Image (cartoon, rainbow, N blue to C red; front, side, top):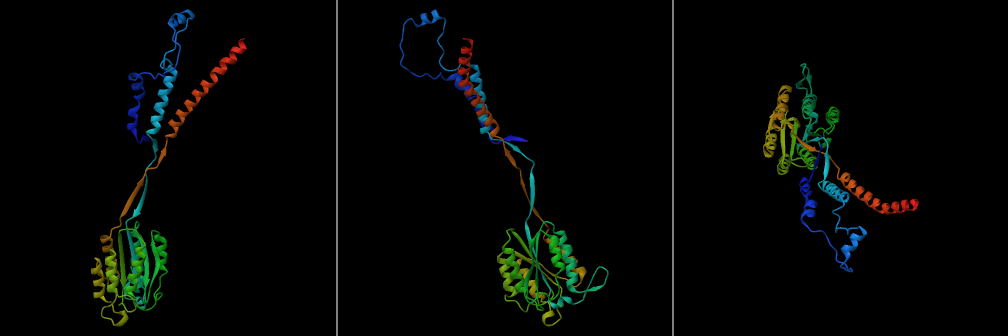
Length: 330
C-alpha cells in the first residue's frame, strides 16, 4: 500500500486559484509613447491590445496548475509501504557451568532404563533436554575442574552447543574443583553480552579447592553486575576432601545473587530441578518489526519537470516551425 508522509501539504492545492482570484495581475512599468488616438488606430487595423498577464491562455494556466499539484504531491512524500518484517531477539543470556572433575565419574545415577550411569552422563541428558526447550535464549557452556574453560560462547546455535556438550569428558579440565573461577569466567563472558537478563546455572558435585578467587567473592561480583546464579549440588555432603559437596556454600552463592539452590540426589530430582528452572526463567523474546518503504516522490516531481521541459521546448520550436511554414508557402 502507498501513503503520504505529509498529507497536510495538499491543503495548499487551492493556493494558485486564490492567488489568481484575489491578487491583481503583475504589471511592470516601462517607458512608452502615449497617443490619444491609440484606440481609433487599433480599431482601424482590426487589432485589440493584449491583456496584461497570461489569464487568457487556458493551456498555460492548466499547465501551471498541474505542475503545482505534482510538486505538492512530491513534497507530501508519497511512499509505498511493503509488508512488515519481524525479527525476534532474545532477551536473556543463559550460561551453564558444569563440573567435570574426577568425582563426576561416580556411578550413582540411573538412566531412563534404570541402568547405572555416572553423574556427568546423567547431567548431559538432563541439560540437553533443557537446552532443547530454550529455543529463543542465547546459551553458553563453561566446564570446570582444576580450572574453568569456555566450551561454547553464548549462541543461538543450539545444535552446535549440543555437540560440544556431548564431547565434554570427565577430567578434561583437571581433577580438582574451581567453582570461584567458573563464576569469574562466566561473568567475563556475560559482560560481552548486551541483554539485561543474565543467568548462570552452576552445577557441581564437589568442594572448591583450586580457585584463584573464592566463590563468595565471585558471587558478590555477580550480584554487583546483576547476574543471577542458580546453584545445583549433586555430590555427597558426607564424603571427605574433594568429593564433599559444599551445600552451604552453594546456598550462599545463590542467596547472594538472588538465585535459588537445588539439591539433586538422582536423575529424577535433577529433571525436576531443570523443570523448576524452566519456570523460574521462562524463555522470552523481544519482537522487532520494520516496514520497508520505497520513496515515490521522484515520479510526480519528474513528471512536473518533464511537462515544463516539453512546454518550453514547444515554446522555442513553435516560432521556428511557423517561420519555416511561411517560407514554404511563399
